[in-house]
Amino acid sequence: MSETDLANITDLDKLERHINKCVACPLAETRTKIVFGVGSPTANLMFIGEAPGFHEDQSGEPFVGAAGRLLDQLLDTVLGLSKSDIYIANVLKCRPPGNRDPLPEEIEHCRPFLRKQDELIVPKIICTLGKHATSVVLRKNISISRIHGELIHVGRRRLFPTYHPAAGLYSGATKQLLIEDFHKLKYLLSVDDEPEPSSDESQEQMDLFGQ
Ligand code: URA
Image (cartoon, rainbow, N blue to C red; front, side, top):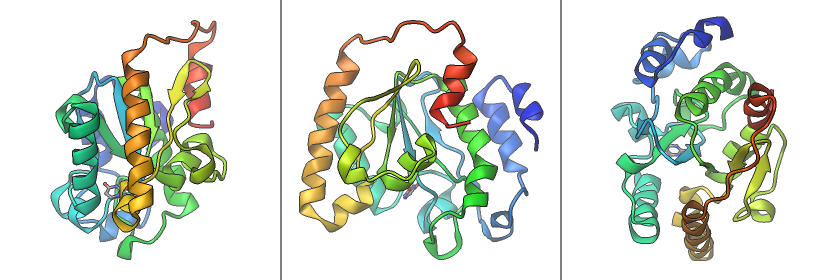
């Protein structure tokens, strides 16, 4: 599945059909369902998680387990939004067996899919959930406790890293930080802070995903 194939894809439905046939890595043999992503194709806000877990693999939808319920709660109570107002995708589209961390080669197989989702949706803000998703998008190993809750401008794109909701299930202090970050996100979504247009948009697009 080459980048050239993806270049001809102009909408999310076609992209999903394309990804549904993916056998680029061994996760294709162990997955139940591909978890493509859900939400509005014109969302201002796109969340990026790490990889499907057990429930997501069974249902084909991201964030339907306990972490997803906390995400729903934060969306509802802080942002006043539901899942249909935003877009949610994962770095990996298939579940790693036993919920192990994604392997570097799995991330690289899936990276063009995530970049294409971003290219088709063009959200105002991308919110990465946790250290892994943020490190993948920025292509460097980051500490989420250092960079969460701050807007990062990458070319014309805006990235807002926060904790993974699963971390908020285990620590009340982290849940509180998530709540505070979501309040910042609410403010950022409410202000018109469009960066200056760039002379080379394709380059800026690629920069966010570190190509
Ligand atoms: N954790 C993630 O990162 N993604 C999901 O879809 C579910 C749990």
